[in-house]
Every structure is written in structure tokens, then in C-alpha cells.
Amino acid sequence: MLLPLKRVLYSGLMIKYNNDYKKVSNIHEAEEFSEFQEMRVKKLLNHVSENVEYYKPFLESENSDEFGIDSIKNMPILTKAIIRENFEKLRSKDYNNRTWFYHTSGGSTGEPLKLMQDDQTIKWSNIGHFYYCNEMLGVDEPRVKKVIVWGNERDVFGQRTSLKTRLFQKVTRTLLLNCYLMTEENMARYINTINSYKPEFIRGYASCLYELCKFAEEKNMPLHAPNFIESTSENLTDPMRETIESTFGTKVSDFYGSRELSSIAGECEEGKLHLFTFKNYVEILDRDDKPVKTGEEGRVVVTDLSNYSMPLIRYEIGDMAILGKKKCKCGNPLPTLEKVVGRITDSFVLKNGTIVPAEYFTQLIGVYCNKGLIEKFQILQEDYDLIKIKAVAYPGFNVSEEKEIEHKIKLVMGKNCKTIWEYVDDIPKTRSGKYLFTQSHVN
Image (cartoon, rainbow, N blue to C red; front, side, top):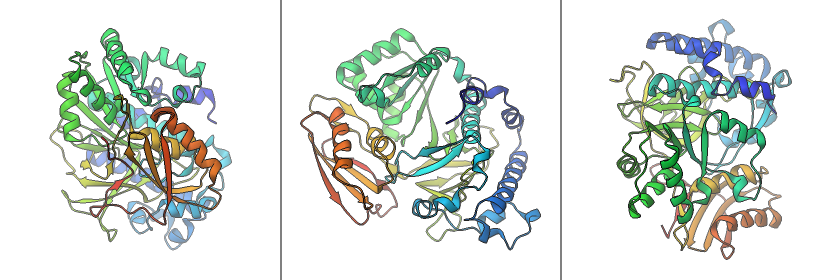
């Protein structure tokens, strides 16, 4: 576990005073960002060549003085399956010198995964998000009044939010609206809360912001217009964006990240996603692992420059994206993606109109009930009270694991909801490379 002091020091409240953030915020030219990234790549590769067994064979023929981005390009792609099979070899032999912890991916690409991270991972994640808010949007997000439309499993499972979390929300002027419990009654209450609190900043899952706005339109309920809205965790489709912006009367900015790597890119005023090169080295590759051209679609492959406990080099996160131009009209010097196109989710719906976001199910299987026994999954809503789960499972996944997941599904889908399990050898992507990890045949 992270020490409480470090959690505070590396939180959004304090990160603006951190020396590493000051270095990043003082960079204003593309060439300077490239040099900063190259420096961090070289430092990471020197570390893994000495401390990480898995990577040593790929670097031993190269002189450490010559390590750089070209060295990464010659290394193999790292997949979730490879991580599972080589967990010990990927762990740095000096990991106990750091404040490390286990971290599970949310399964937002249908493949839950257990990793190791450390305090530097948290720090650079917050540097990425604070850079986006402060340098690109122009808002000191940790200090303004804000509403977060987010999932809170503790409410669903009948657990009390910790005192530490409640104090942190109070200090950061944050109200959390639980989108795992989006009944019509709760959505009406959430709208009233937003209107009375009048936040400057709203952040939330794309689908949940969308459903809340649709409900407001249907019920003819006005919504307070904040200065900033940040959509995250899911693909923000054009219909979602149009509905959210027209209902709130505020432009939506899209933030791209993943649970394994956190902050990856943020959308500018021109609608381009600027890659945080100071935190990651990102490649967009075709099926033959070759870089795509500007305007072409490819697989997102990321090297995390901050995780020294279990370095992820050329990690394929399961998303598809369209490569953008290196220069943007907005003036920010960071290179761009046109859009992320590979994640497709459906929210589920109950007969009474309650909306259950896809994120609940990916977190349920990928985090809350993750015992490392499911390799891939896909969740289908066949009817209002019928769920089918397709799973690629390892030996050891049994009835008790099934029952735990089924119980937690009933907490949001209703006590009469039935779950059918279908065990398969693989769950393929669509022909275009997209992965449908939740799909509703009702909504």
C-alpha cells in the first residue's frame, strides 16, 4: 500500500508543486518534449537491462549508451497473455526498494489483468491529468467545485465510504454521484444536486453523462452549465457528445486513459487527443507491427515510462486508434491521435428505466471479483432480467466464483435476474478489430 503521506504529496492537490511537474509544465516546444521523452526512455531501458529478466535478452546485444526509442522499436509486443505467463520475469528484482502495490485492470477491453505498480506510477498519472486540466483546459481542477459522475461499488455492495475518502472529497470540493445506481429517482436527484451545487467542473463516464442528459431532456429538467466537462473511461461517440453539449450548454473534453497506464492523452479545443509523451511512449501499429501513417487506424501500443516495479514496454492495451498529425492548430506541441475507435460498450437497462453502465460489469469481473481465473469475458443482456456471460476461464474457476459474480449482478439488475455462463476457447474481435465486451439486445 502507498504511504498516506505519499498519497497526499502525489495527489492532484499537491502535484503542481512537484519538481517533475514543474519540468513538464516549463516545456513549450515539440523538440524539448522529444528530448525529455528520450531521456526517460534511456533511463527506463538502463533499469530493465539490469533488473528485469524478461527484457534482458532483447537488450544484451546493445550498448547501454545507445539505448533510446529505437531500442524500444526493436523489442517484441507485450500482450496480456505474455504478462500472465511471465509475471515473475517481468517484475523488477529491486521492486522492494519501492513503495509498490498490486493493481488490477478493470477489464475495459474484456481481459482483466493483475499488475504491479508503485508510487511513481501514481505521481506520473496525476502529472498527466493535472497537465491536461491546467495547461490545456485552463482549470485548476483539484481546487474548483466539481461533480464526479462515477461508479462507487461500496454503495452497491452496502459498504460505507471510508473516512479518508470523505475527507479528501471535502477538501477537494468534490461531490460524487454514483452512476452504478442510475434509477430514474436517483437521476432526478443527481440533476437537482448539480443545479444546487453549481460546480465549475464535471467529470464522468461518457455513457453515464449521456444517459443523465437524455433523462434531463425527456423530463424537461434544466441542467446547470459548468465551465468544463470531462468525459472519460469510455468512447465518447458523436451522438453522446452532441447530447451532452446541448443539454449542459458546455463543450465536452475527452480524456483518454486506461486502468493499467492511466493518463495517455487529452482532447484539445480542435478535437484532437494530445499524447502525454512525457509519461508514455505510444505507437499506433498495423497488423504487421509496422507504424501506421497519419490518418490510418491501428493498434495502440504503449510503453509506460514511470513504472519501474513492473515495467510495461510495448504493451498492447487492446484499443484501436487513428494516428493524428504531430502539429495541431491549438498550439500545444504534443503529437496527436484523431480518435480512439476500438472500445465499444452498451449500457444495460431495466424495465423501470434504470440504467446500468458497462463499466460496472468490467469493474466487477476485472477488479472486485478478480482472482486471476478469467482470461477474457463478454457480457450480453439478452432480456431485461437475463444476462449471458461468455468467458475464457482458467482451471480453478468454479461455482463459488460464479455465484459471487451473479450475486453482485443482481444488486444492480434486480433479484430476479438470471445469469447464464458460456465457457468458450476465445472471444474474437469484430472484423474491424473492435471488441464488444458488453452488448445489450434490449437497449
